Image (cartoon, rainbow, N blue to C red):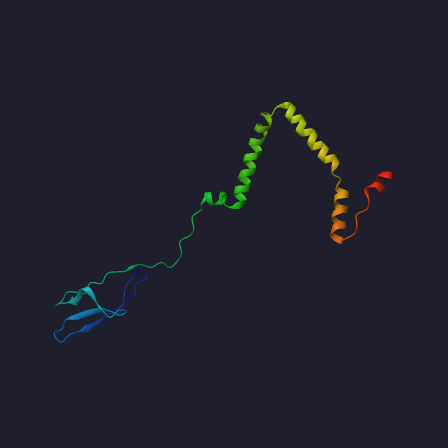
Length: 140
């Protein structure tokens, strides 16, 4: 005997009627009778309990705001936003003389770096061409 219900799930049972007229139910899958033997005596029905409710659909994932910020892009954005607010405070706490020294060092580094020379040197190394002497360019 199998019971079909759209919302509840039941096990399948095998019913056997004895010579004395008693109906016994045993589980189809295991073949064993239940711990409390389900026996119909007289006009009493056999009581079968449901195993659970049917789940036809997976529950939809709930929106989790924290998961938006815990991915790598969210962490990088958070770090950048933190730096936007923290760096000006840090710059205010630096001694003015030290700030001027740092700014002058940055200017010197920017003047020393010529992008065209860097590109030519990188291409020459990549292609295996010997570098031209810098002394020839200075003499012009």
